[in-house]
Image 1 (cartoon, rainbow, N blue to C red):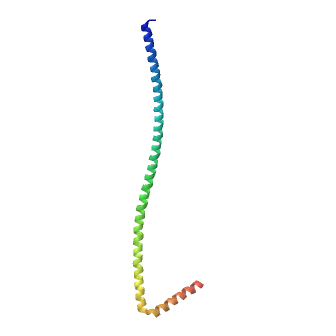
Image 2 (image 1 turned 45 degrees about the horizontal axis):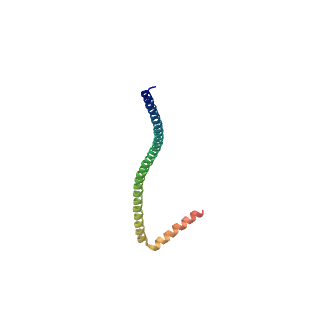
Image 3 (image 1 turned 90 degrees about the vertical axis):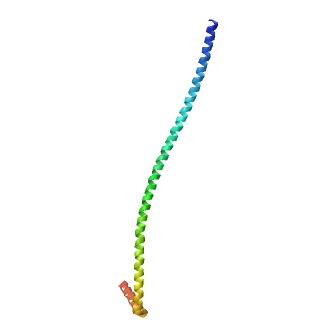
Length: 125
């Protein structure tokens, strides 16, 4: 073999050695990319779970808003009923004062005692 052929063979050997090293490096890079892809898959899975939780929380929040609106509407009716009841009680109280003034304290006391004794008699029967 000539000197030239020897040099060519030597260079080819070096090239093959470098190619083998490059193949090893690419295999390492491929392995690292596989690990990165696995991590991204895990992250995607976690984001999917976060999205699901967010949808659940949003649904719960909307339900709470609906419940609050219903409670506000009911509260208005209750408030109106209480005010009407208060007005009725005030009217009854004023009427009672007027009756008390008309009949006098003594007469009212006698009638109250009669009414209470009638209730007691009914209860005892």
